[in-house]
Image 1 (cartoon, rainbow, N blue to C red):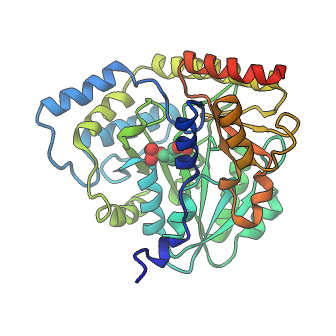
Image 2 (cartoon, helix red, strand yellow):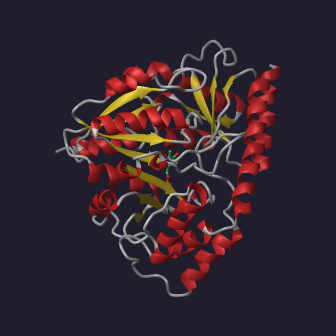
Length: 391
Ligand SMILES: Cc1ncc(COP(=O)(O)O)c(C=O)c1O
């Protein structure tokens, strides 16, 4: 008897495990995984500790504690003028990851199709497979990671139930423009499709990039489920506190699944989430300024080394094309990442795992570096990478 179900047997192991293991083995500076190597704001950490010490340690309501649902709604109004009823239009989830999975389970049926942009964040498609939903891929191409509007239009058909939009985008750093989102909205209306947005990098924006929330475009509140989380904005990726927002009908559907996946999210961390979301504007401005400086440093180093750099408009990530820098024996992105760890002692993530099997060639020459690291981590990575430029 095979222990593993057919449902999950094809998933393999995530590339992050492989890269992290190799990075540890070679004592590489790890610019792979998108987790900060610094801590969150002290007042947020304190709020969690205080909650633990104040006996806030039993189950929270399944949909989330009232104070955090209120804080999520207030944050949405403060930054996007999006008005949400905290009692019926906000659901607290175990990170954005659970939010997306519960959304797919709650809003689609087996045999439906859902559209994703490629390269695609690595949980969406396995989520769909587990839900019996068929993914339809629309590639992002070129220096600005644009989609072909005709290709997108063709991806919609009578079986399409949902489209997932991740902006700012992992792994490319693309921030979908208002015009692009308008085109997506038009197709959602035309085909009566629900949009699920993953906006976990909503506050990590560079230069003059603006984050547009699809749900705030005309007529899109009714058909958009917006998902975000605490981890990236507040440097607490290990807390796994997220939320899904939208019209009552969509949020109820997601909660139907959520109630039987996690039921409720860690109470003390929810209390801390309420404190985090209520931080003054200066916190969000300082966050953006510190990320701008990190991104600029890394982009500068990668360019000096000779890589083609795709300058990100948002997110934790910088994509590069490694051709012209890697030695001749390196033939694909996985070999590039392995070579960089072994020979240069810097870890990055190969891009092809973000593509479906038949499109792997589209990511073959790309690799992703994470910028969410301390100054000293970035300085050490820079020192090692720049030596490469001098070889
Ligand atoms: C696009 C995207 N969505 C979701 C997540 C995970 O979010 P959470 O930790 O809140 O589940 C990540 C983390 O890397 C991400 O890059």
